[in-house]
Length: 331
Image 1 (cartoon, rainbow, N blue to C red):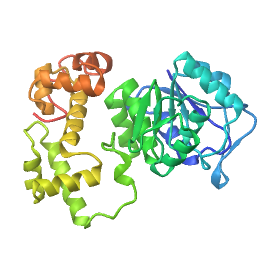
Image 2 (cartoon, rainbow, N blue to C red):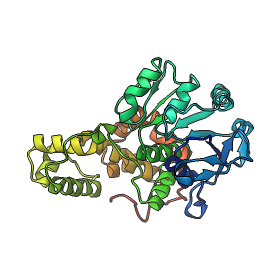
Image 3 (cartoon, rainbow, N blue to C red):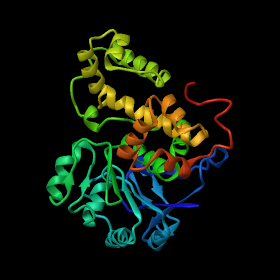
Image 4 (cartoon, rainbow, N blue to C red):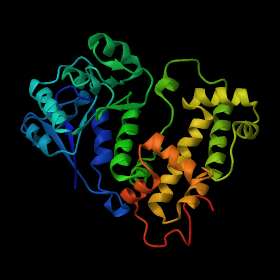
């Protein structure tokens, strides 16, 4: 069973605790999701950890349990300058030295920075806290606009909902795209969002709601036709916009370019096919819209640091000849 530790101390955000619990603490084995062993870890198990709004969290393991964890999650903070207890900081340093994956949600990056674990490393936090993190911890290389990033197996995420993105990504990384997608469906959220948090920084609202609705319809059209050649000009025509206007408004809404978004969707489609079917690689590439196995292999190498064959070997859930009768993407 995959062991996950939620590190708790006074001042952690209830929202982040809820996200971690929803992703890792809900039994979905009846839907094919692996079993997770989520533990609430603190300096002791007898004192409830207070959180804002009259909530509290009762730990069920002490910090010694971190030595058994496969993944350690640090929630954000209500007050981003809240000092973490020294035993917590020491335990996080030991865990990283052992090679355990660490992940901080939102202001949890400040806790990792207090431990010195982000010195000389890239990290992200909520866009409104970027300057504060830079000022308080000048040895951290703060990336201003990612949703989440990794450096030396230490993950940090931007604000609030980006914690969901990171948790689902960590599920996808360890257990495959289908497990992450199943959890996302049960949470009624996207399996992954593209773009950066630049799309959420304070700025004038979109010109009209109509533009947002139109772009959503275009994205739905693209998802239904991933196996076909798709161009920015063609998508712009579908939206009734010029290519230049379409690209500008698409990027403003999603935080990424139309072509980058299409590539992300095609990689996700290929991952599903590799997990769910035993289709030959050229057919997977065709149905996902890559055109050739070579192109698909190049994109897997650059984006996922693996090959399609290695990905299938790691995450396939398909019975023999699963691809013969039906296809979860497009024929």
